[in-house]
Amino acid sequence: MKKVITYGSFDLFHEGHYRLLQRAKALGDYLIVGVTTESYDRQRGKLNVVDSLLTRMENVKKSGFADEVIIEESAGQKFNDIKKYNIDIFTVGSDWVGTFDYLKDYCEVVYLERTKDISSTMLREQNEHIQRMGIIGCGRIANRFMMEIKSVSGINAQGVYNPHKESAERFATKYNTNAYSDIDAFYEEVDCVYIASPHETHYSYIKESLNRGKHVLCEKPMCLSKAQTEEVFDLAKSKGLILFEGIKTAYCPGFDKLLGIAASGHIGAIRNIEACFTKLENKNNRELTDKKYGGSFTELGSYVCLPALKLFGTEYDNLRFDSILDENGIDQFTRATMTFPHGMATITCGLGVKSEGRLLISGTKGYIVAEAPWWKTTYFETHYEDAGRVEKYSEGFLGDGLRYEISDFLYAIHGSDKHTFKLTRSESIVISEIMEKFLEDRK
Ligand code: CTP
Figure 1 (cartoon, rainbow, N blue to C red):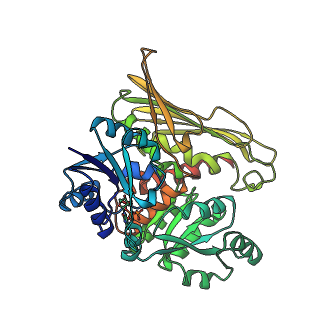
Figure 2 (figure 1 turned 180 degrees about the horizontal axis):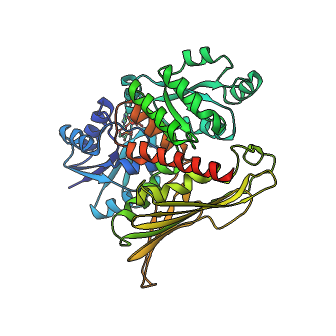
Figure 3 (figure 1 turned 90 degrees about the vertical axis):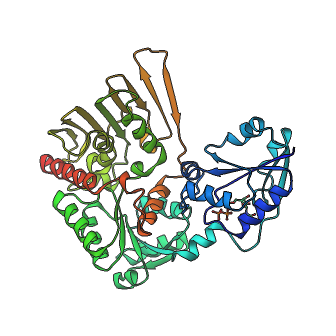
C-alpha cells in the first residue's frame, strides 16, 4: 500500500485545497493530511487564520480524500511523521517547490501544481474589507510598526499623521505611504489608528479617534491616569469600537505559553515575581529629556508590571517605588515593590542603569526563569528542588513582535474575542493607575 502525506492550514476551505487533496490521494492508496494548529501557524508567521482547527479538520474530512487527518504542531514534525507512518510520498503545492527537498532522503517528494487565482489569503481579504490603518507619530516605534504591519494580512498602513508636515513627509517617503498633516484628511481615509505619539498625547488622540469612529491600537502606556484610561474604555464601548493597549509582550506566543505553564501548577502556587527590564538610552533622547513624562518607569514599567498583574491579578494591597533620579528629576532606575493577597512582586526598570533583565517566578514547588529579553519571550526554564530536574520551553517570536498585537487587534475588529484575554481592560486600567501613582510620587 502506497502511503501519501500532505500538510496545510486549509483555512476557508477552497477549490485549491480540494484539487490538491484530490491529486494527493491519486498519488497512492492511503492519504494522511496534517492540519496546522493555530499556535504553529502563529509561530511560522501565518497570522489571521479564520477557521478553528476543528472546522479546518472537518473540512478536510468532508472532501472525502483523506483517510486520516492528524494535527501538525511543530516544524520538525514532518520528518517524524514520515518515519512514524511509513510514508512513501510527501506532497504539497508548487508554492513550496524546493522547501521540502530535504525529505527526499526518506521518501519521494512531489510538488503539485498550485491552482491559480485562489488562496485563503485572497478569501480572507475579500470577506473582510481590508482595514486601512493610520499611524499617528513618526518615532522609532512607528518605524518598527511599518515593517511589522506588512506581515499581517487584512490590514494595510494607509499613511502617517504628524502635525509637522516635514516629519510626516520624511516618514511617508521612507515607507512609501501617505503623509498627512491635516487631521481631518487623515481621519477621512483610515478605519483604525495606531497611536505612537509621546505618552502624554495618547489620551487626547484616543478620544478624538474614537469620537471619529476609528478603532484604536495605542502604544503603552495608554494613559497616565486611571480615570483617563477608564474614560477611553467606556467611550470605546459606547461607540462599539475596539481599543487595545499595545504592550507587545502580552500578545507574543512565548509569553502566553509561559503564563500557561506558570498558572498550571507546575511550580506550585506562585508566591514571588521579579521582573527586570533595562535599556541604556542615549541621554539626548526624549526618554531622558522629557522632565514631566520621561524616565524609565513610564517607558518600561508597562512590561515589568505585566507578569505580576497577569499571575496575581489586578487587586494589589501595597505599592511602593524607589528611584534613582538624574539632575533633571527623571528616574534613571526604578524599583517598584508590590504585595498581593497571595504573593509579592519586585519590578525594576532602568534607562541609565544596566542590570540583568530577567523574569523570575517563584512558586511553592519550583520556579520559572526567563532571561533577557524575556519581554520578547522565546525561551524559559522551570527548575525544582531537585537541581537535576529542569524543563525547557521555547517558542517562536518573529520580527519585532508587533505583528502579534496587530493580528489580535484585527481579530477583535472582526468580532472575535478569542484573543482579548491577553491584555484586558482592567489590566490596562491598573497599569495606568500604577503609572499615575509613580508620577505623583516622583514629584
Ligand atoms: N494549494 C493549492 N492551490 C491553491 C492554494 C493552496 O494547491 N490555490 C495547496 C498548497 O500548496 C498546500 C495546500 O493547498 O499544499 C494547503 O495550503 P494552505 O497554505 O492551507 O492554503 P493557501 O490558500 O495557500 O493559504 P494562504 O493563502 O493562507 O497561504
